[in-house]
Length: 92
Image (cartoon, rainbow, N blue to C red; front, side, top):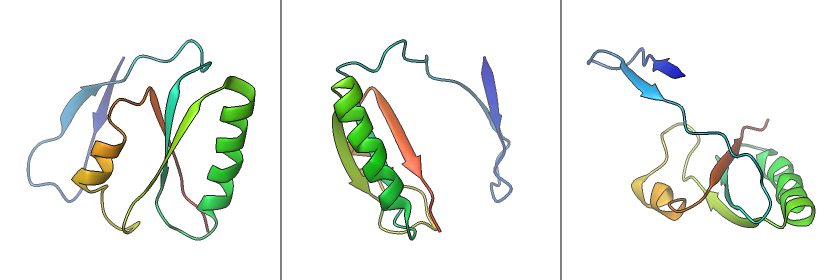
């Protein structure tokens, strides 16, 4: 499967990216939860963290962006390296 990403603000042509392989099981996986700091996103991510830990024994890493209006900074991306999955939430 390929996904075409189109950035309307980009000056270069769009790129084609392959999707990551889907996980067959969450048990024992390391999952990053990316909080974009919009109002109420943290409440959803809190519930997701509890479920992942309790139901699947996941190691949950909590990561916060500095602002929701920009892409994740390099240090934020670096914190998520080595994770099996990343989940993000947008709240309002």
